[in-house]
Image (tube, rainbow, N blue to C red):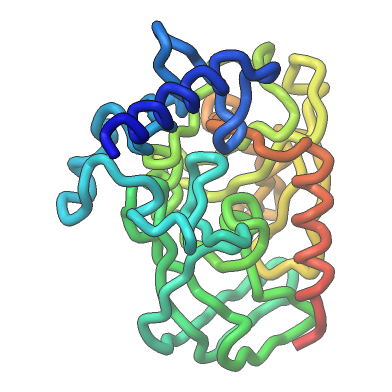
Length: 288
């Protein structure tokens, strides 16, 4: 029995070592270190022979109740982690947990739009397991003034593909936990980078994604949704969060208050991401 086991491992190693592709297990890069069969999963290596990770999860301290060697919460049949971002199940759907029903209220006086009601409230999880509080307005009831879409706001549109409504105070946690990298110069910006609009106090007011850029603020456009507006729009990056000053004037966000972040991994083509958000939005949009 022992010899058979040894022969199995030897055969597996030889087979992988001479494979014609270097991307096998979950599409990660394969390395043959002196006969070992390891795949580079960025944060740690995965050994295909046993199979197990060779080291602990570098973020294991954030989940002390779970073994530091596990993948996807030790439940890969239910969960996947293709991008290292918000937790999803095997079908790619965001994992959502319902907590309670809660009052919902949003008003845009300038546009004459409002939405109030009693909707489902719960949480989704970041890549390292922290809860992100969300409203699931598709479950519950919402009374609206005007033609609105209360299924998602700017934050939910960008970070959950329009599935949930997220408050701005949750965004910093998403950026930190899911590994968004700051881009300090507009010259380095790329399509599908995330743009954060902040107030002077540092409060996050709005988020959108870059739809096109030539490396300048004047030549960069963003795509996003405002509050309960019925449809997403495209505009210049400096016009991404225009707001009234109370005296009949429209104030643009200073470039010093515009921050750009790059998602950790773009697991789909940029156009596919935008198309998917538009599809989800069009399925949800309807007068309430």
